[in-house]
Image (cartoon, rainbow, N blue to C red):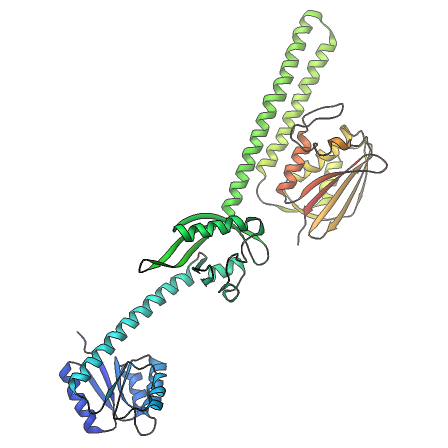
Length: 459
């Protein structure tokens, strides 16, 4: 086992030699220096395990020399002196000494003081290393982490949490619940979850939070209490950003809902049409009336149209690949090519965030105006409303009765002479929700209807 190195700083040669002999006898490796200046230099060279420092020295006194050694090298200090008044005692405290030995000393005083100082230093170094290790783990963790006190005040947040939320540790340390990253609509649930976790211990929860700029994000929180001597001291929470996972789950759920919608329409409308066709053909076999064949043919066409509409919806479902920038006028010009008999007037321009279904969205509205509204003219105005682009599509047809305006976007609502499933406008509503926008209908003057599309534009 390597001997502990002890630096003796004493300007009285006889005393220094006596201490050296005693330390050799104790099994230490002592070295002698006679001044404060030399002690600082020697400490840097040999890095002793302990310094025995005389207070009264020529040049730099022992207290100043000890201060330099403590601050620069963090080496434990034991003072020895023939006299210690209150003023001198207070000065030595700034160097955080490990003990005092008074001259003349006895070996049975010297050895225990040195042993206790070395053991204390060993324990403190181990504690510092443990704290540094834990701090390094927390500070370099890729996951956001925070520590909360019993009164819910924030004790610590790591850099990953600062990066995710946009809040600095200075803004968060000391904050009590409700915290600034909680959202208004979920604050009560989150508060209840926190209280339960702090009361019952380890928990695993999904929570919706917000960044400093208001952006929402989802985290999975794994939490556990930090105990000491059987008592709850702190609450440690580890976050995992699951925003993308939640987005995929929501998209999958929307996909399932649309598939359910298709199945309902297939079961109901196609079966009805097939029954009508079957009945018409049976009657034709008996009476040979041509109008029965026309009836059957009309329902075949209706079913084909329905299948084509479902193909549009299938495109809508499969196009969940993120939104892209679309020039509104380009989409409009492509759609109106299919309506040569309609007079169109387009004003304004803009770019919106959407997907490939935007073409079908606008086509469904125009088709609705032509087929159901019987319009021969459509005006389209494009404008801006803050962070959004507003597209107004106004027709001059028969209009939409007030009593059904709230129902026209429902998946199975039908009206007018042509009937149908209301499937096209339902696609419009679902698509607009996917884009982070919405659609509404208004009256036109002197007659007709105005469909208003609100879509996000590029910031």
